[in-house]
Length: 262
Image 1: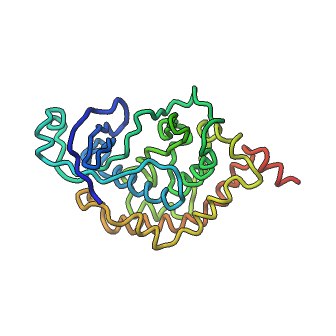
Image 2: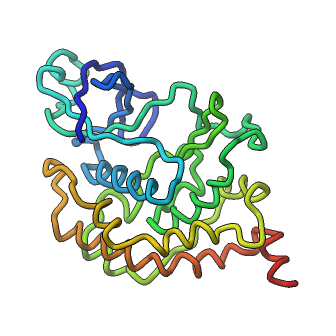
Image 3: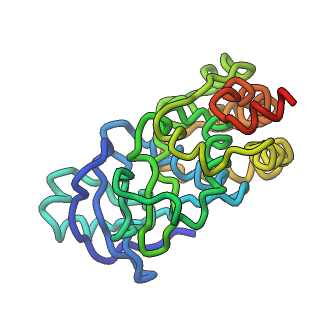
């Protein structure tokens, strides 16, 4: 369901897609990415689909809503007019004022949902979200709730310009991701089978659930039916690849590795 933006607040200070803050009719504030951002409307599709897929796995992912911005609202604010923001359906993620992407001063031992870090790693491999392992800006820490929250899936799949051909060319190949952000969580998720629960969830995701997650994108975003079909097939085929791919990172987990040697 779409919700109406009722008040423009300000631009965000960072973000490749140059998002802006809006108050919406539900009383919440959203970080809104526009259809005409410099990377195109594929970013909006990636974010919305990733949100829906993350929910299937029960992962902590920032809530997204399709945001309707009217011509009257654009005309009220020179900054929006200068950006030539089209009236129509954009995409917003719920804004968390206390959230931080800087983990240097975060005591992860106090975090209440660290067990989801394993799911995050599984999820990123499934959807080919290639940049979180090296970019802290794609994970939010909420100090008031003491929880981690996944954000920014603009580069999932193959970035904002994916199409059916690209999806099918790589349908049977899975890159392995490992880097500083993932490494932070090893002490908290290392076990004889750290990824087993979430890998099993991915493997059990039904075709119907994937179709529901990918379909229903606004026509204004101009994602073709053929490309949507290609992405659905891509996600379905990759379900069976995640378990084997994560075996490649086993050496980073002392308990998991030791269990294999016993």
